[in-house]
Image 1 (cartoon, rainbow, N blue to C red):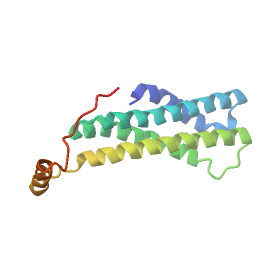
Image 2 (tube, rainbow, N blue to C red):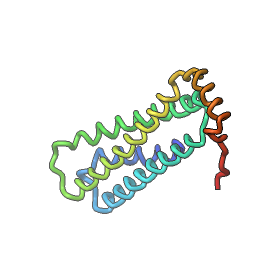
Image 3 (cartoon, helix red, strand yellow):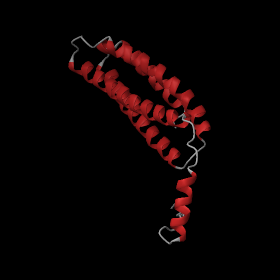
Image 4 (cartoon, helix red, strand yellow):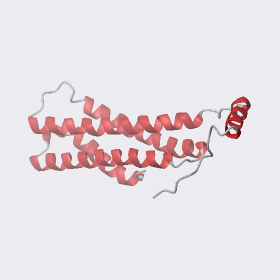
Length: 158
């Protein structure tokens, strides 16, 4: 997962740029688009990396504790950006500023996707563990004895 500092500064700069998008110079617009593209890539890579981390398995309590804190931070950032962008919802902006606004929406969409992904994982981690079903366990044991199943073999990761 990305560290808080790798995202905080670009997002705070982005929030300042959103507030004055209609007054940005062409150079500032180009830099803003670059920042937006960078943030979209960071959030997309974060989701991919976290998914790989989850796939390796981890303690559910540890997962909920670790990612729930980040989830709250992400939600506060999203709230700020969404309210800043909402200010321009009904305004007609010049094409370059409108392009920036479109990129702001791309960042918000990627952040929403990451938030949803983490929220689902945290919610699942908080669910109580299912009790072991003795009947299914016995059925599986008997199927193995009859030769209907094979033992699970772990494959080495390459």
